[in-house]
Structure formats: C-alpha cells, structure tokens
Length: 258
Image (tube, rainbow, N blue to C red; front, side, top):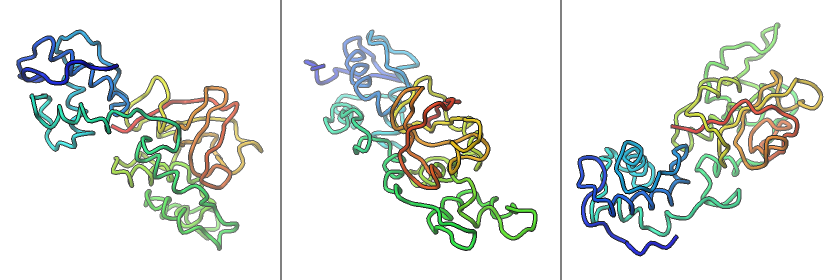
C-alpha cells in the first residue's frame, strides 16, 4: 500500500490530540509493521484511538524504537514516527533463513550441525552449554548407579535446553524447565504458527521418535509446513541441531516470547 500522507498534523496515542486522519495513518503504518509485533493482531483501520492502537504503539516503541520507557504516543517529527516510516523496518519476514527471522531463529540456524557424541565419556561441549541453561540438571542423577548427572552428558534429552539457550542469547526470558511440555506455559499463546514460534509437539515414543524424545514431547522453533507435515528447527532432532519435517505428530501449541 502506498501512503499519500506521510506526516501527522498532531500527536497520536496516549494523552494525545488524536485527529482522525492522523490516527488512521498511524494505524496503517503499525499494520505494515505487524510482523514485528507478533502476537498482536492487525489493527482495525478506522481512525479511532483505543486500547489496541495504544498497545501497538507501546509494543512498537519497545521492540523497534527500543525505548526504555515507551509513552504510547507518536509525535510529529518524533523518533517513533520516523521509525514507522523507515523503509528498512517495513520489510516483512521472507523465506526461512533470511535476516528478517526472529533473532532467536537466526541464532538457532548458526548452530545447525551440532551433534551429540556417542557414549557418556564423550560429550559435545556445545550441547553441555545448552544443558547448562538449566543448572538443576547438574543435581539430578541420570542412572540408578549414580555414575553421572543429567547436566553432564549429551545423552540427556536436550531439545528444551537448546530452545532456552537460543532465547537467552537473543535477550529473551529463560524458559520454565528442560521438559518440553512445560514450554506450553512460556510467553503467550499463538492461534496460528509464525516463523520462529516455540512449538510443542507430541508423538507416542517408539522407533520413529528415537533421538528426538523419550517422553513423547518435543519443543523446537516453527520453520514452516502445515499440521500434517510441520517443519521444525531445533535441537536433539536425531541427536543433532537441524531443520526437520515432523509428520504425524500432534501439535500441542505455539508460543511466543513476551
């Protein structure tokens, strides 16, 4: 959509003048940035100020303008309006692997190829780093003989640890636990998947799930596909970090960092 109006005549948002034409322009611009405001939904472009429009302004100021104390207000010639009009920030997400993917997804892609090593004596330093994001694993014995702790071997199911490591590296809040199912409590729920969404899936454990899950639950990042054949970028997928298609798995939920 090409906007003929490029400026506002007065302030828009919280405690602002909120003229109809100005509010309409801000709503249109916010909708063009909606890919950066997930899980917010597109605004109704009606020129009327309301809680949803103000919330979208605040989220835009937090995520794009990087304001420490968002005021929920767009002023003529101000930094928020300049960012809304900036062509660089208007680019929508494209194919997986592009620089417009969420930061944690880009971090995850750089880890592709990391593999677990066979045997408890040999362990991938990188996977131990993922496991280290949940320090309590260092205190849980991995066998009845008490010969090793879960945090010390890369045989431990580490899909949730990988997700946690990527999010922490991206500056997001750490997750709830190393159990994949617990990630249904993280962040906010999405009705539909978005590239980079934290995705929890389930399959009855068996030969087809070997190297992926012992509990039947798995968590990774959504990379494409539909409900029948979903593509996930994650860790402990065949004992490695990769992008893999999961067919016949039940999708338990999609989550997004707050």
